[in-house]
Length: 113
Length: 112
Image 1 (tube, one colour):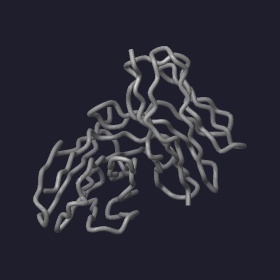
Image 2 (cartoon, helix red, strand yellow; image 1 turned 135 degrees about the vertical axis):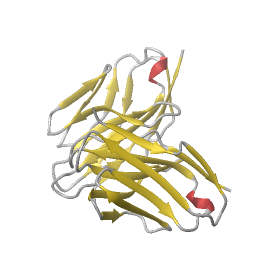
Image 3 (tube, helix red, strand yellow; image 1 turned 180 degrees about the horizontal axis):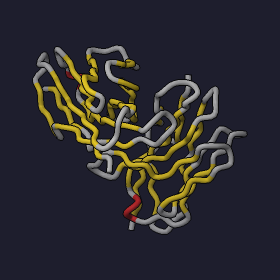
């Protein structure tokens, strides 16, 4: 079945550092890909999405590009802030297969001032 | 605008007691509905999802069940809670498959 694998955390960086959180997926079709963020004590909220190959999703300085050839959707940000500290989830939804939304295990990010 | 309500926010229940968590969505019709459990180190585990009234798909066999008695109402239940049922439960909805999901604020369940 479909699945999502993302890098284990926690990831600890200093403020203004460059961030990459790796995400790869397994899917038989052409899924939509998402990054969600969960701030401390809150539910999840969508950070960005991409619906087809080579699409780039972006929001709040974060970017991720849908790479079908490498089945990846890595999250990047050029200069992180303390307020970016949160748990980040990669997810996919394949409407040609079923109605599930499958999430990775999440990556906890700590940004030090 | 659409909103999702999930309650209660926190719950402490003894082992063997029943459970009922409720989730309702406003401002949309015929949403896809989802129940997830978030446990430390295990990420977000899909428990149940529903694409319509009375239609429930179960992902993980366990002592939990779900029901969708109305279009915008999704209920997570258990007849007898286990210690292992402790966790953070999240309800979510999406307009249709392939679209982004909107999450409730979650319920922190502690079984003692």
